[in-house]
Image 1 (tube, rainbow, N blue to C red):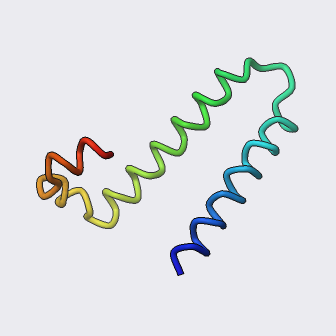
Image 2 (cartoon, rainbow, N blue to C red; image 1 turned 60 degrees about the horizontal axis):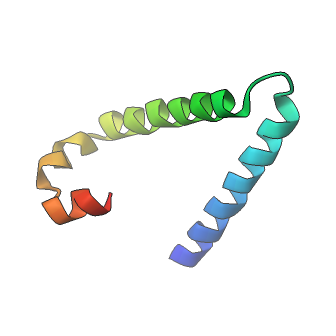
Amino acid sequence: MWIVYALLAAVFAALTSVLAKIGIENANSNLATAIRTAVVLVLAWGIVWMTGAHHGIKAISTKSWWFL
């Protein structure tokens, strides 16, 4: 099942990039990428806090931190 999720993630990532190129005409591409990344980061941390998953940060091993 994970392969389906991986393929969907790749498709949606590509779609995001294409739609961003179409929608953003007079903006620096690096700035646009930084803004999209900031939005995703805020939403991801919001999900982590709403689900209570932030309590698991202490349980992450040093090895896992390096790979992250």
